[in-house]
Length: 185
Image 1: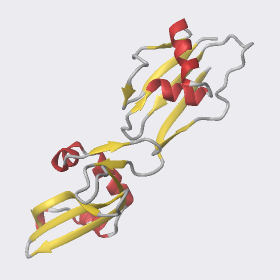
Image 2 (image 1 turned 60 degrees about the horizontal axis):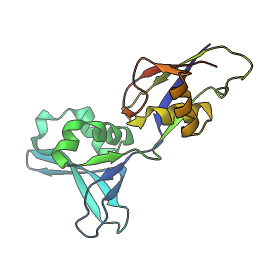
Image 3 (image 1 turned 90 degrees about the vertical axis):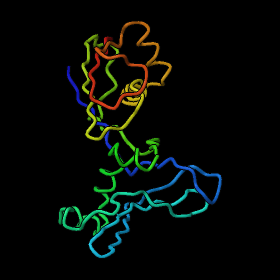
């Protein structure tokens, strides 16, 4: 029996960066942009609010770029405050490195399954599950297995230790890409 699970984002991740006003280090990006033009030069920022004090921080997207070098579609998406663009830019390693930010994906994703994931104990049939990531979200593999099968994390670790949970990739640790595992019962 073969199944496919998909890890999908439910909202934008929390931006990890020190607040200059309070001791918090967590910001919520809501997909709002600020665009500023100075003659022929353009600046653009993604705005994020501090989770504690509500202070605004700017995540630099464009800095002193000639207006003619920016694609009109991209500029329109900035002006329209496109949340899809905000998600793309937060995923961009160049933007994260330039702004010295990290992302926290806790409670920002969900696992979509077909609903009949708990196998019948008497069946004895092996189940092959393919897990897909349309967006690169770092999640512990055993957490995905436990959530998809409706097990506790300790039970999924026991299945792995007993050899009933098999995968070509190591199932401990975080992963950002697709993987496949087989559950033997």
